[in-house]
Structures are given as C-alpha cells and as structure tokens.
Image (cartoon, rainbow, N blue to C red; front, side, top):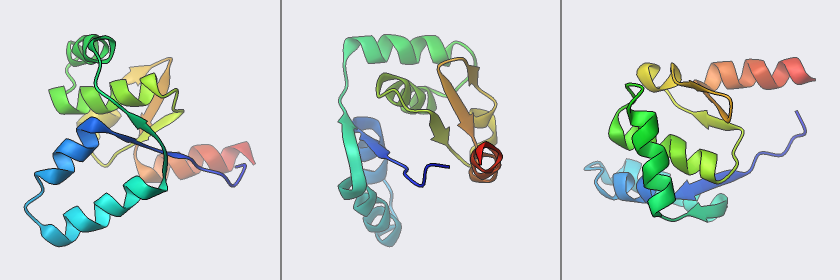
Length: 108
C-alpha cells in the first residue's frame, strides 16, 4: 500500500446521507465529505452509465455509487452490501472492507 487513500464524495452519497433518519450517523458520515478530494456531480453520462450497471442486477442507487466511482477513476468501491460487492467490471473493484485490506496488503 502506498499509505495514501483518497476519498471521493458524490451527489448520490450526499442525497442518501441526507435521508438517514439517525442524526448521529448522518452527521458522522457527513464529516467524510470534508476529507474527500473530489466531488462527483450528476450528469447525463453518469446516469447512462448507472443505468447500464443497473441492468446487471445492481440496485439503482448502488449503480449510481458505482458509476460515480468509475467517473472519478476510483480503483475501488468499498461496501458492506453483499449484493453490490458481487458486481464485476474491469474499470473498478467493488469489495467489502476486509477484501479491500487483503488486496492492498498483497501489494506490499
């Protein structure tokens, strides 16, 4: 690992977090935005990409998260959603936090 991880924030993450009924979780997650190096805005191209991802069985909002990450040229989407983590594409790795650490540790 190069000891540097950049976070990306997106309009869909902001939207979903704003709908979180648990104020303490909503506030904790919102703090991650300040640590992010990029903000991905909605665009027609992004929505078209997400629609294609959704056709593989990924839920609509999850497809938007993946599309945002691809658009930002991220290497990973880290999720605890097992269904979302099954998505495979040559442009991005979607995995759970444990697998992310295993992948990165193997690079060392």
